[in-house]
Amino acid sequence: MKTIGFMDVSTNIGCKNMCSYCPQEKIISRYKGPKMMELNDFKKCVNKIPKNIRITFAGMAEPFFNNKCMEMIEYVHKEGYELEIYTTLMGMNPNFVKILEKIPLAYFEIHLPDDSNRTKMKVNKTYLKTLKEIKNSKIKNIHYQVFGKVHPKAQEILKFEVEDLSRILRSRAGNVKGFKEINHSGKLICPIAGKFLKNNALLPNGDVFLCSMDYGLEYKLGNLLSSPYESFFKSEAFKRIQNAMNSQSGEVLCRHCAYAKKINSPKYIIKKMLEKIGLLDLLYLTTKNKTMHKIYLLFYKLQKK
Image 1 (cartoon, rainbow, N blue to C red):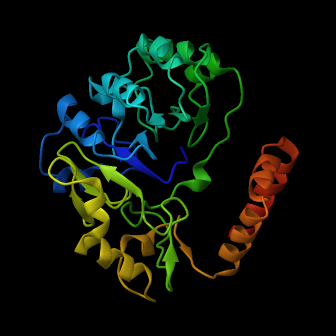
Image 2 (cartoon, one colour; image 1 turned 180 degrees about the vertical axis):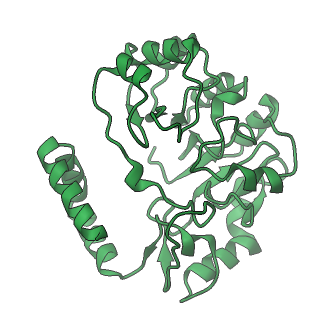
C-alpha cells in the first residue's frame, strides 16, 4: 500500500535530553495533559489511523523515554503499518535490538552524541552497549546523524565517518532563537506533508497538531481519542490553515519553516519536473557518491555566501 502521509508520535512530553536546538521549554509550558502516553490510549489512536499513513516514532521528544515505547512499536507492526524510528537511544534497552531486527523498519535514524554536547545525551555504559548492539545488528535502513563531530566514545564503536549536518539546523518554524528568521510570502506547499497536509503530530493526550514543528501548539486539528481521523481534514481549523497557505501572506506556521516551498517558484518547478521524469531519485543517489557530495557541499557553501 502506497504511503500518503505520516503520523509523528510523541510518546511523552518533556524530553530529558533538552538538546540545544530543540524548543522543549515552549511545548512543556503549553501542553496540558498526561506527560506519558498510555499504551491503551496509543492503541485506540492507532486503530483510527488508515493503513496508508506511516507511523513515525519521533515527534517532540525521545520516544524511548516512555517505557512502553517498544510495546507500541510492536503493536504498530502487528497491525500492519509501515513505521519509522528517530532516536538518540536514550531510554532504549539493549535487549530491544533483537526485537527490532524482526521488524521491517522503513527508516531507523540514530541521532549521535557530539563532542560539543549540542545533542545532550549520557554517553554511559548502557548507551555504548546499545549503540554497539545496533551497529552489529541486522536492523534494516539504519541512518546516523550528528550535529558536530561524533563523540569520541561513540566514534570508537562506529569506526566510520558520519557527516556533520550542522548546516541543516533551523529554527523549527521560528520556535528556536538564534537562527535566521524565515518569512515566506506567496502560496506555499509542504514537500513532506503535500497539499493535503498529512504529516501530523500525535501527543500523549490524543491531541493531533498540524506537524511536529508546532511546539507552540497553535494549530490543533482535533483529538484522536474522541474523533475519527478523517474529521481533522474537514474541520474549520484545517480549512483556516489551507486558506492561509493558499494566500499571499496569511499567517500560518509554514511561513516560518525551512521546509516549506513557494508554489511556482523556480526551485519548486524544477523539482517537480525532475520528479515527473524520474530524475530526482537519480540525482539524490548521485550525491551519495563521495566526490559528488563534496561538489554539492561546495555549491551549498557558495550559495550561502
